[in-house]
Length: 120
Image 1 (cartoon, rainbow, N blue to C red):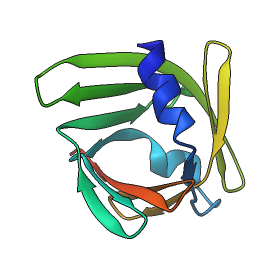
Image 2 (cartoon, rainbow, N blue to C red):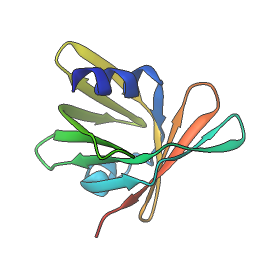
Image 3 (cartoon, helix red, strand yellow):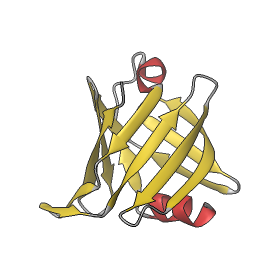
C-alpha cells in the first residue's frame, strides 16, 4: 500500500486549485478512468484510481488494476493557497491542482496530467 502511495507521489503530482473555498470544494470522492496525458499523448492504464478527501483532513488513495488487484493507503492533507500537501507516514509531498466543477485535474511533473471526476 505504501508503495502505491509513494509511486503516485513520485510521479510528482501537482494539483492547482482556486484558493477561495478550496478545502470545501475538494471534499468527496474523485475517480480517474486510468487515462493520463503524458507529454501531449493520451495513455491508458488498466484500472482506475480513486481519491477520497474527508472533512477532517484525512483521505484515502485506492488503485485498482485491470486484473482487479486493489491497493489502498491513507493520508492526511492540508490546503494552503494553491498547494495541497499529502502526507502518508514519513512521506510528504506538495501538490498543485485545478478544480472546475466536478473535474479535478492533476498535473504532474514532466508534462503529465490526469482528470478525476467527482463521484456522485
